[in-house]
Amino acid sequence: MALIFFFTLWSFMAVCSPLQEEAKRAASQNPSPMTDSTRSHVRIPQKPYAGISFTISDLFSQPVDVFIPRKVQHKARVNLLIHFHGANFVLQHAVSETSGDFMAAVINLGAGSKVYADAFDSPERFLLLLECIRAETGRRLGHGVAIEKVTLSGFSAGYGAIRRILQWQADYERVASVILLDGLHAGYVPDGRVLYEGGRIDASGLAPFIKLAGESSMKSSAKRFLITHSEIFPGTFVSTTEATDFILKELSVKRHPVLRCGPGGMQQLSFARKSHFEVMGFAGNTAPDHVDHFHGLAYFLKELRKL
Image (tube, rainbow, N blue to C red; front, side, top):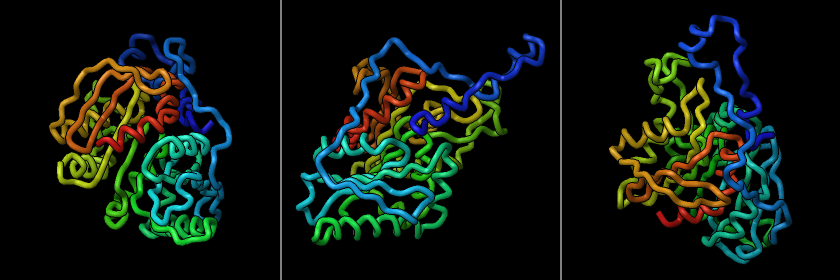
């Protein structure tokens, strides 16, 4: 299932060496428990939401699902939330529940961040996406519609699309806000060597997000950036905790311990904030803990608007 893109791929290494040698090296990819009995893991119900739904085909390998909530259908100017990797009904719920005149587009391209990054291999791709959404929305509503602000959200592997979009300066300027939902990774240098074994983080994969975090952390900035993460440690690539810690260190922003209830039974353990940039760290290293971040989108969208 796409919502837990890498959990279904995780497996133990075959035992092919003495135990003392095996203990000296990390597993090729750390497995994660697929169940959890500690937290409630409330899920958004899959049901019809009041509004207009349609798809845009031929832009990517899979269609783009678009939803216009009833409450914004008379508007001449709307805000657009484009989400990568996740079920359409969760997005419908999020934009129906939040203020801010949002409509939503959802793009699902498969497992792994590469398929999302490849979909935006030129700056024309994102601009074309925006124009197709705007034009078809106007046609469906029977009146002209302008897209005022664009917010990008990505769950899990979906961050790959956002990273590529932000790499193009013209597209970077088109994006007002970003939410990363337990999806911010990079590679180790050398490849596969974790930090405790002397490896380091390949900062090139984080550069667009460091740039955005730096700009959004300025009081005068119009950019907004929210990152949420769990405690999952993949092993062969940088975890969301390691990636966010790297960005915080680059910006000299301190992480603070906290104990708060989050959406759907989530348990928040830390936060870091500077102006319009925030990191929220949550408990959990299981598949349900990971999916919690996506189903908390409505909550996190409201938190973003507070920044």
